[in-house]
Length: 264
Image 1: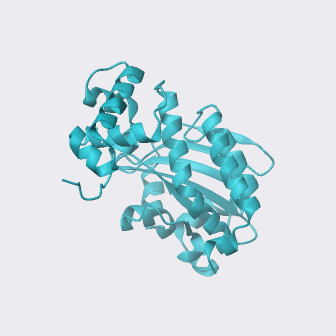
Image 2 (image 1 turned 120 degrees about the vertical axis):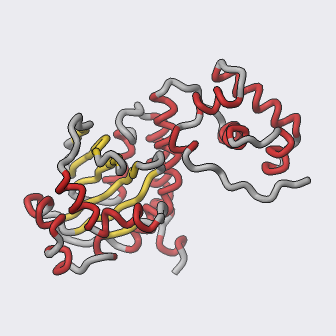
Image 3 (image 1 turned 90 degrees about the vertical axis):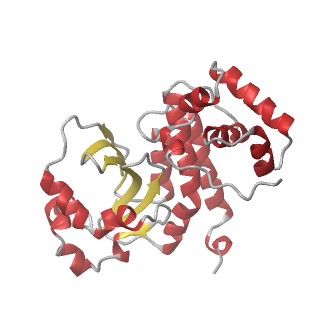
């Protein structure tokens, strides 16, 4: 069955509302609260949480969550997690899958990796999840700087997530990524660039000339120059490297664009 056969018009309207609310709401935390509220309406769960973890330093940078019922919490620990937490987490395939596989786009469920009996026998689950009764979870990755992992995950106690709910998150994932990067720009006080200006600046930051960028994006060289003028005027700097450092989020810089073959 096609995606259009699984998702109805009201689903698509709900997906649009998630993005629109995220672009309007205050950029508090990794994702604006309105996004997590909308996500919990879209995919009912006991909790929806966004995590930002530093894999190199083995530190939790941020945890932000909304529970069923509307209770919110956000925590930015100033002390690292204990070594046992990281070892058990690393051995828990459902948590370490993206880092180990390099797959940064797939929406995954605990049930992709474990049956319920296998889940209960894992040390990580046995140590951290029984008090809350969580037996099912679904995770969608977010754009992350090098050495970090960021993701949104949903947890339930009584039933697994459906393939339709997985599809909803798969469709929404690139738009959630856009909201994350937009929120970071706004937290840093950077004027919002248009999508085309962001593309031009990204390629400029990677060393492409105006002529190269024109060929990649199928626009004229004069249009590229005009976009760069607008970028300089909005950021208040006069060099490409300074504009990129100021206006492009670190997660965007960590993942260079892969352009099509340049026209000559």
